[in-house]
Length: 295
Image (cartoon, one colour):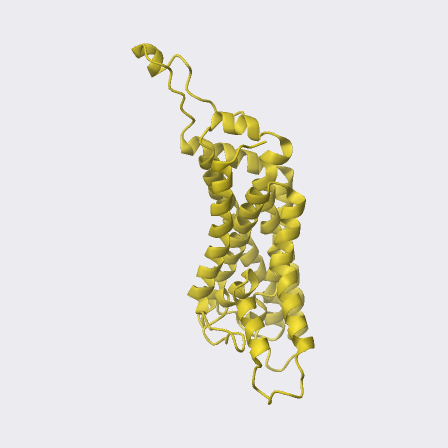
């Protein structure tokens, strides 16, 4: 944080004869410093490019695989790349949240900004802004990836109807939320390895494990066809309130349906769930940062 400076000791306090009052830099300067640190890292550019490429590649493959179906709808493959594209912003947020603690620069950072919380808030702004750029590029890449398959069937891409704008905005919002979730987990745990492990388990592994465990434990002959057992309903409800389930709600078109047996929260409900997943660990990280000594 060499870009940050505090007020000199011979400031207003020295001129009035009283004790010098030490003030940290203004919040815009803290944001500028965090933005400089973020954009100067080589990993930032690598993760951004990888996220866009993954979004394009997976959407392209999904659309081309589905293009042979008689009822092929190109826009049905629009969100195919989100499953792996979310990993990039998630890791980027973790690297920012743990960066100062990994390199040891937190000492100079919190010396320049003794209140500490403005640093975390500045990281939220910097990560959110960078993630928004990456998310917009990833959404554009996903749309571009649909063009070859749609053109091969002579199907025009209508991005203005059938809830498609909502899906596009939801995709971008989800990627930004994943970056902020990564930042929150990284700032809370302060170590990249456990933070990445926890985030990957929460976002990718846990929903699959819950679904598979429920399927294995359910007797396929006991419930009537078309019904959902209480156990399956419970698992589906838990999955709905995980980040992945909230993402499904967020990018679901108006004609889509929720998970069977789970509450249908709708896109706005999914957005609120994602906001909760970001705010809760971020608030805990802020309390820890403020209340405990940094060593």
